[in-house]
Structures are given as C-alpha cells and as structure tokens.
Image 1 (cartoon, chains in turn red, yellow):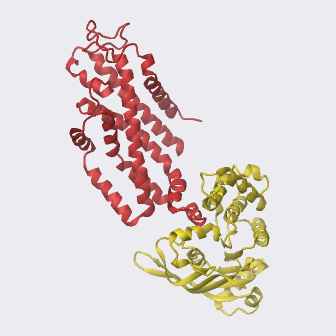
Image 2: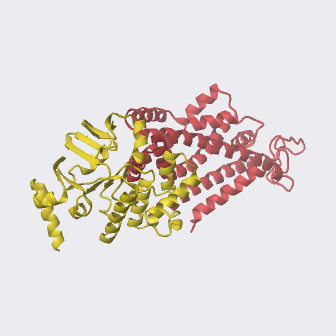
Image 3: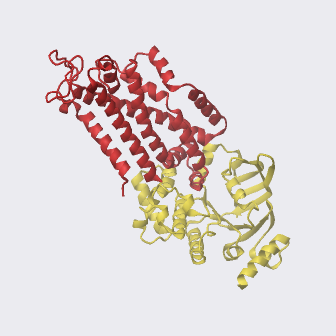
Length: 263
Length: 264
C-alpha cells in the first residue's frame, strides 16, 4: 500500500528525470541555436513555449536546463550527505574529544549564512557547473551530520551493537554494517529535501549571475536572461519558474511521503 | 586440569556524574577446561559486569580498576584492542538474555551467522552461508533452509536464542559465557535450550560460564556454583555442599527462595 503523496512525487520527478535523460532526442531545436526571424515569439505551434530575446527555443532550453539543475541537485546532496554521514557517525560513535571537535565545527559553520558563504567562494573561484556542485555540497553537510550523530547516539546503546562487539566486529565494521544501515531512513528523507534546496540555491546563484554561465541553460540562468524582457515576454519567466516549483514540490512530496511510509 | 580462565582480584567502578559506585570487588574466579561454572546472585550483584569485563565489553562509564584476567595464560586486561577483537568470538563467545534485541533487525539469520564466520575465517559469503546452515542444523532448528532467510522478528524467542547460540558457536570458542540466556523464555523452552547447551558442550568441548538468578538451573547443570552478592563472590563450591550447608546469609536467602518456588 503506497501512499498517494509519495506516488505523486515520484511521478513528477520521474517525468522530469525522463526529460533530462532524453533531452537531446525530444528537443525540437538546438538549445543555443539563434533564430533572428523569431525573436520573443509567444508560445505557438512552432515554438511550444515561445522563444527568448535571441530567438532561441525556450522548450529546448528548458529540456537541457533540467539536466543541469537536476544533476547539480543530486551531486551536491550526494557530497553533503556523504560528508555528513562520515563526520556525523564518527562524532556519534566515538564521542568525547572527536565529538566535541566535529560538532563545534558544525556550530561554527552554521553561524555563517550559507548563501553568502557560497557567494564569497564563487566570487573567488570560477563559477562553473562543477564548482557550483562542490561548493553547495561543501557548505550544506552540517544538517545531515547533526541528524546522523543523533541517530547513532541512540543506536549505539542498542543490544545488537554489543552483540556485534562480542563476536569480534571492529569499530569500522560496527559503524558501516550495523549503525549506518539502521540510521539511514531519516537521512534519506533529509537528503531528498536537500535536493530541492540545492536546486533552489543553484537557481538563486544563476539568477545573480554567479551560477551556471551563458550560453549553458539552467533554469536559473534562463530566468536571469528573462529579466530585461519581463514586461513583454511573460513566458520566459513563467515556465522556468513553474519547472522549479514543480520539481521542488515533487521532491518535497517524496520526502514527506517516505517519512510517513517509514513511520 | 588446567584453568582456561583465571580472574584475580577484579575491581570495576562505575563513574556517575556525582558519585562513583563499585560494582565488582575482589572477585576471584577460575574456570577449568570443559567445566560448567554457574554464577548466581540477585539483580545488581555484579554478575553481568564480571562477565563483560572478561573481554572488556563493559559500558563506557565503567572502568576496570585493578586485577588480572588470564585466558589461556594471556592477560586480557593488558592486551591491545586489536588483539582482543580476535579473542572475542573466536576464544570467548557470549550469549545474552533477550536474543531478539541482540540480533540486528535489518539482517536475515543467514547474514548474522555468516558475519561471525566471515569476520574470523576469511571465507566467501557463499561458503559462510553454507556454514550457517550447518550451524542451524547443529542447534536443532527444523527447516534450517527456510529459517536462514527469516528476519529475527519473524522468529520466536526460543528460535532466536538458538540462532544466537549458532552464531556464538560458529567459531568454536573455548569459553562460552551465557548471561541469563533463558530468563526471557518460558519453562519448556528453557529446558530445551539448557539441554541443547549441555549437548553442544559435550560435542564441541568448551567451558561454560552460566549466569543466572535461578538456582534450579544451577542444580541442573553446574559443576561448581559461585554465589555473588554486592559485587563480591561470597560462596563457592559444588551444588550439594552449598545447598546442604550454606555459609553466607545471602546463599541461605537464595536457597529459601528456590525452595519456596519448588513447593508451588
């Protein structure tokens, strides 16, 4: 018995994932092909979602943009959850000095507003897709680390951990085989929420011109290009916004649905 | 006969935020090869802490203050953690009170037992699972084939305890420490598990340290009984001697309680 919320979320994300994978096949035009004869065309038969101020087909650009936005979300969260898992489980398992050291660094990092931290780093490094992924990942592992630590703290008192120790399992083995698999469910929910956050962050960065650089399309960079023509071409701002909204809604629905299913 | 385990003058303290409690004091205990020693006493008398101290499995807020624990003439208290890991499971194995909470809920019976085998014997997963099946047959589980792929919550308490025994004996330990393994089971299952342990002991040849508060078990299986009270071993001897001429007042109390239950 699957819950509706989870199914709905999976459906939305499934469609977007399919679009991202099939982008080169289903795009009607090249995403950066400029057509001087059809500037700022509203949605029509030829251009389903219209064209932008350079005559590029918005639908094709959004298809390709979904690849960038989704992969940034996935990889950034992969990095942050990975770091969070490693540090959080060490902190929870060993306690004492190691715990104090890791958790106080978390506290310090949480004091910085993440967005401005990222802005500062991007300003120094070159803003490329690869850098954005890494930077978002490296600045958002504190939440997962705290979550995992608290899970491990309660799990390590359970009897089967003592039993594993009694048959001669090493610390490493106890952490990776007995503790983390039992703690993974809430972490997974948190990670899926994190994907939505990362996509939003990337859109924000691109909108400020510090994210993905033109002519590569991402949903955020399409949005920023629409800024100057906002008054005459509503479709360029509407559709990327809608896509971001739907994907974040989808991921949130999956996370919420999973959380309920796990309970 | 030679001693397989020698505990001398063991003292264990618990450090709580505002006080220090001595849980075990001046404990001396010898276990010979193939001997069954029953350590009996009320709750909180330090039986479990004594047993866990042997391989340093005590909780983090407890510390062994003094004493020596020799296993095969090797002082376990001086050993490094990495050497001790080798002795846990292979030399000294444990079975515990609530088998279902001592098994990891995420893994099947086959995986749990295979883990013990894989940890010490360098075998592939497939070989270990075959060995797990043989071990389940050894502890007399019917339909071993099916039980292998069950999860702990699908099995009864008695079945889980058999699985746990199979896991503990997977590496042919020289000493098995059973910490109230039948307390959570009903009387008939208790008898089955006790008989199984005795039979396995004869087949495989290991020493058994059996912890209980139930003197009727001591009467049934013990070569030697040690009575523990307030962290000390207050009396030690064969069942007949202790039963007929108890010296310590706490032994008398335990025997009175045992006889009362017997009359019901």
